[in-house]
Image (cartoon, rainbow over all chains, first blue to last red; front, side, top):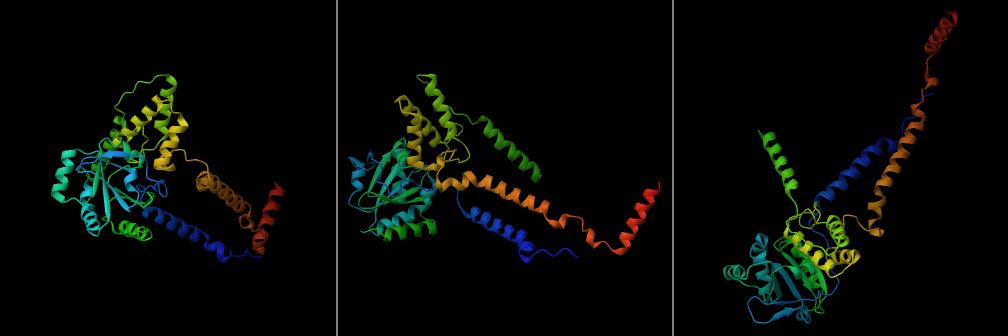
Length: 179
Length: 156
């Protein structure tokens, strides 16, 4: 009596396991661990009130009510903010309401930066020590939040908006919001 | 040469780790709050440099969060309140010990499941008949030879 040959399944099992593992690891490699999903999506914008950079007065979370707004966290020291700036300007020219959150920046540096590159922001709130940014779960500029008319955070982009995929994702969420 | 550069780079990386220590000094009202502060800053992940905790990291955000924790502790906030504060803003990801909930079941049980699956395979392999000596497949000549050897043994 001869030992019976292993079934097809048994023979290919190591290969199947190997391929499954490769697929799993390949998917893992394409994910960016720096992009941590924000727990704030679907929640109201945090309560805050900050002085404005270019005007008198202040900007608070109440000023987010009634408009669809992009809150763009930027700083003059942030290289990627420079990269995305043209995209922010295009959105602004299209009529998007964009509010800047000037993050841990020097006021003079920020003003010079805007003078050189253009100012797409309707308002710029100044978060000098980054305390308000903590409430927004910001961990690096640039970050951009999409806030709906009711003041609810609907989407967050981590990194520059000049990234095509991130930009498209933002646009698709924006389309679902009523103007 | 390349190896040397790589080696130098590695040394640099690790020396960096060795000197990375918080620079601020906080004074605590009681030993208890100081203990909570150190425990928390070791269990919270710094999101800027993701493989360091808040205690080790010199990233600006980590400094800010250490200050925030210190302020909250001075205000008499509890450990749980501070953890909730961080999770509310940065998500479960800030916790080096992830909470136990359906989303993280695989994370918690994964290693155990992998171990059990491995054990099952090992046992099946050890018990499978293909590992037994296939006596039945001995040829007549082999059998005759064994007979002879046995017979010789008996003689001595």
